[in-house]
Image (cartoon, rainbow over all chains, first blue to last red; front, side):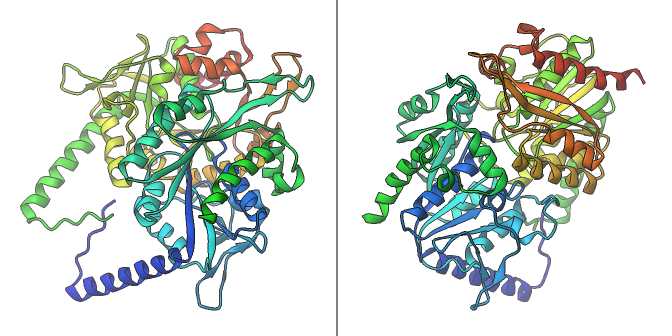
Amino acid sequence: MEIIHSGSSCDAGKQQMKKDAQDASVEGSLKKIKHKFIVMSGKGGVGKTSTSVNLAIALSNKGFKVGLMDVDLHGPDIPRMLGLNGMLDLSKNHKLAPMKYSEKLSAVSIEALTPNKDDAIIWRGPIKYSAIKQFIGDVDWGELDFLIIDSPPGTGDEPLTVAQTITDAKAIIVTTPQEVSLADVRKSISFCKTVKMEIFGLIENMSWFICPHCNKSIDLFGTGGGEKTALNTGVDFLGKIPFDQNVVSCGDSGISLIDKHPDSPVSKAFGSIAEKIGKLAEK
Amino acid sequence: MEIIHSGSSCDAGKQQMKKDAQDASVEGSLKKIKHKFIVMSGKGGVGKTSTSVNLAIALSNKGFKVGLMDVDLHGPDIPRMLGLNGMLDLSKNHKLAPMKYSEKLSAVSIEALTPNKDDAIIWRGPIKYSAIKQFIGDVDWGELDFLIIDSPPGTGDEPLTVAQTITDAKAIIVTTPQEVSLADVRKSISFCKTVKMEIFGLIENMSWFICPHCNKSIDLFGTGGGEKTALNTGVDFLGKIPFDQNVVSCGDSGISLIDKHPDSPVSKAFGSIAEKIGKLAEK
């Protein structure tokens, strides 16, 4: 668990130089990116990754240059959801070239550095910290309007590393409406306050569902809890997104829901949230 | 990130003694527990915690003495789902007394050590490791037939610590049927193989849903993918559990679904899985 440095002071000096060089790379990458968002959730399975993917596509469809960084190291689903296979290449300047979804949207995930996609990444915290710093500093992101960071649920090493490394990142918190999920969202809000990360807003996902047989609305996980929590905690409410089986099937087959079903309530909801985020770029 | 011990050899000796004493406590607790299961998932939100809770209740209803250990440190939902409030007390032998759900079922969660339930646990890996060891060694679990351990999604510090500390723990892997979830399950299986943890079986959750308006069946997340994955990977398939809004409402209000709706398909599915697990105790 503990890394003990017992080397000479010369080794320590080399370590420090390596650290300084990495910090400089990270800083170099970050200053070319105008706005950074981390998509967080207290609980898993609230649709955080599909939110990250759909927001990134919606923003890129508006003409912004967008990067999508997958720091969910144990469950990296971004490449599958974007239909991207293969590994990361080296770019001209000896950095890693992100995968291209389109001219406007590029992505990086540990999945694209793992030859066997079924292998588990069994890493403890310190290695995760270092991997995330490399995802920023060693990747040739180029000039971006927006970087969307998909993090694993909870308030552990991954979001903490992002908060400490990208100090101007803003949080978008995703929840489903039930109390068990909201209780964990309050922890995410407490996390942001503790690490002094601005909260851009809260999204309530899977707010309702239309039965494909009878077309009646069903509150799978209750309803309205996200909006109420936002109000009670003074966080901006960004919108409600319904549960749609197309999100599942598009995610599984790596097809963009927004491009395939542009008029669906889900696509419209993401479009309107992307509108709010896009306004930041005009400022 | 790194803990550097620069103390004298006397300090190092004390550290070692403390570690040896903790290891002895952990061993003492574990040898009184007959069967240990860790409930894992690759992806979040597949119903891992409700599976842990319902399996524990189903086993205790069969007369077994059951402990439920919540190692999802960032999203500890077990106490809320069991309707347990309050903090852990000290037992007669100066260990922590687990919360009592019933005579047969006791539980431990970080939530019961946190005065403000909305505070986030912002811990990096090494502290988690130490907390989980304390959950075993410093808790007065007593004699148990079964210990069910609810872990966070993924293959990080928490399941790794359990695998290394409880070497005879068996894994129960929970998934939903869609491909994105199954891809992460294959990582959980790879994790178990790597750390040499026996896989007891796979459960497919949220396999179908009956519309409350028209009573027709809906495959919210596709169907059958869990069973197929079990078959392909040589893992025992333990059963399918439907999505039921009562699971959400019971979880939110801390009421046992199995006790409130004993004849529901969900309760029956958990009963039949508990039957399979219970057979271990007869051996």
